[in-house]
Amino acid sequence: MRVTKFLYALCVGAVLGLFAAFGQSACAQRAPQAELPLGELRTFTEVLVRVKQDYVESVRDETLLENAVRGMLSGLDPHSAYLDKKEYKDLQVGTRGEFGGLGIEVGMENGFVKVVAPIDDTPAARAGIQAGDLIIRIDGKPVKGMTLGDAVSVMRGKPGTTIKLTVVRESENKPFDVTIKRAVIKVDSVKSRILEPSYAYLRITQFQSHTGEDVADALDDLKQQSDGKLQGLVLDLRNNPGGVLNAAVEVADAFLTKGRIVYTKGRIDSADMSFSATPNDFIAGAPMVVLVNGGSASASEIVAGALQDHKRAVIMGSKTFGKGSVQTILPLRDGAAIKLTTARYYTPNGRSIQAEGIVPDVALAHLKLTKAGDSGVGMLTEADLSRHLLNGQNTNSKQEIGTTSDEKNLASQDYALSEALNLLKGLTILKHHTG
Image (tube, rainbow, N blue to C red; front, top):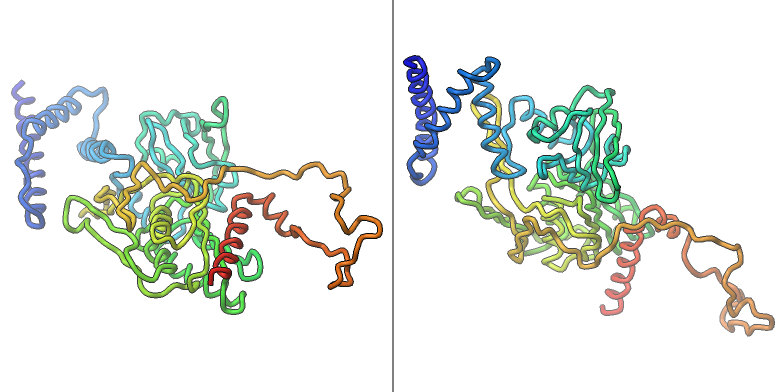
């Protein structure tokens, strides 16, 4: 009993000393905080003593304290987390666009791993993983009870090895297994092409540290392919899970000439930030359509919200994910770090999209077109009638008018993109008619 009391007193002293040191450091930067909750700290140290003394196996002090820190952060919200040295390094590599794994952005929901979005051209996307999927088992092991960090660590692994995920999907009657081969994920965050003469397509798969620069280069290239000027642009943010805040600001700024892009509000002064546009629109005011869906999150919602509030673009698709919080990476002295939610962000009009999402201007269901049966006989027209009058202005009485084969292919391959292009053409025509 005397040993237990001594150990208890020692632990209390150590923990209180640790918190006192933290408090001194914090007070040097911030206003004085409330007194430490000594009762709760005594409970903590009592639990620590009990585990060290009575747990079925011996556990290192470092492990117990790290688990306590992990639990403290994971209990705050789905996005705050403790990052050990390896996890912190992986995060730094990920923001630069190259990392190992499956290629999915994930969070936690009711104890399960929820897919925010699969990243384009990655093993997860090729295996058919979809935004909104719940992963309930990893290689047969239940996810329930794991932290998000634990689950991510298990899913990472040596490139070329396989992993089996058991997935629950809303559209399926029962869970099913998906086997995925791990790979080194190299993400090109920006892709672009010309859809039709002077109508361009720009896809951002993830907001990385260099995305703003890549968008500027892509737009320059698209304009060169269109004789120096674009008539319209489709910006595709579907299944874009977010990323670096500054990159989102740079992308929105590429299309805005004035006003606020986004602002954040937190408990401390350093968490309050505001970002405004500079007077330079890369496409000179040409009409824009932005495609979003339930996998568009965080930085994607910043861009969509800014362009929507400034009436710079029409937002098309389905409601976005609704992650309206800012996470700050705070390095620790031992090489680890904590990812801490420090603020909420707001669109230029003051909307918080946390747990609400961006509601599109034009709702579009997730559909896939299939070709209807074709008898091979076209619709009868005036030009097909015997002894029909000639046009009088054109010697060719039967012109081919209608949808091109390229348009038909686009509609069958990507219905949402096809609809966005049609809307973009309508906006361009309206702009020309109204001057």
